[in-house]
Image (cartoon, rainbow, N blue to C red; front, side):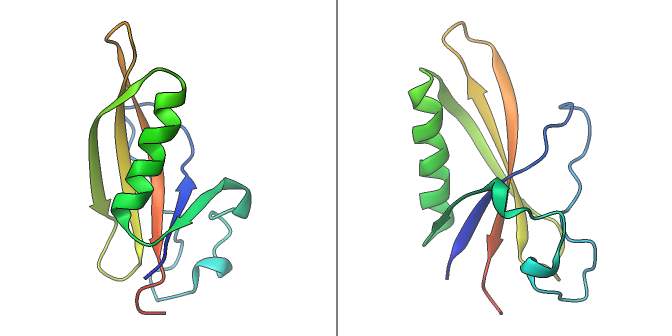
Length: 106
C-alpha cells in the first residue's frame, strides 16, 4: 500500500476541514481537482512513515509534534485527515492539517 501525504488548505482551528473528494462514488484521486500535485509532500509505505516525515519537517524549525490524530472522512473514500498539533519552543501550539491518500482498493 502506498500513502501519499498532501498539504491541506490552512483553516481557522475552529473550522472543520472539508474532504478533498467531491464525489464519494469511488472516483480515482487524480480525477479530483482539490488534490493538487503541487500539494504532494511525499509518498510513503505506511501512515507511520508519513507522520515521521511531518515530525522531521517540524524539527527543522526547532518545534515538535505534541499530538497527531487521523480521521477517516467516510467509509467510501481512501482519504484521511491527519491533524498535527505542533508545539514551539515558547510552548505555544498550532494545528496543521494534511490529507493521507491511500491506493488501497484501487
